[in-house]
Length: 131
Image 1 (spheres, rainbow, N blue to C red):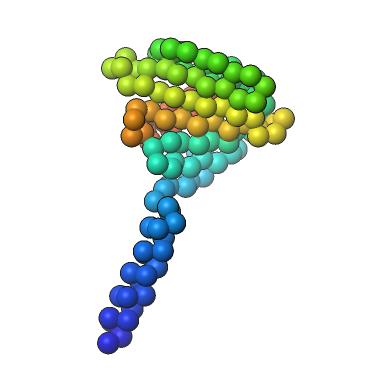
Image 2: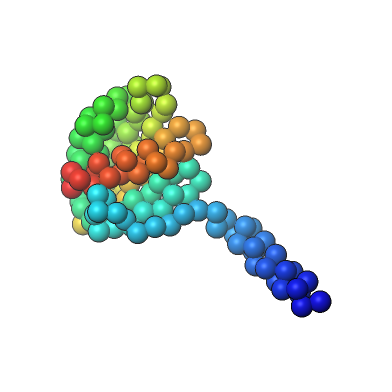
């Protein structure tokens, strides 16, 4: 009876976690990204950089060029911007850059339709190296 009760308790906890959308990874930022944090949720990596919006925008464009990722389009205004790019194999990349404060910026990276965490983190690391 004790085992059954414990198992039911764990199933309830697991069910609660699943229903609130907690299927994501949250990790501290590595040395390449900087002093912020990042999270990978539903195929999209979101990174908070401790740098201004314009500086982060320029670093993102330079990072894509360094990684030999072809920029297809880029548009921005004072409230944020998006960059659409493609890898050599045609996989699409979408990056959204949004100022949080005058000294911090959010960058969201999605590689392909479903997302690719490893490639997203490589792009984020390259942006971090340029900041």
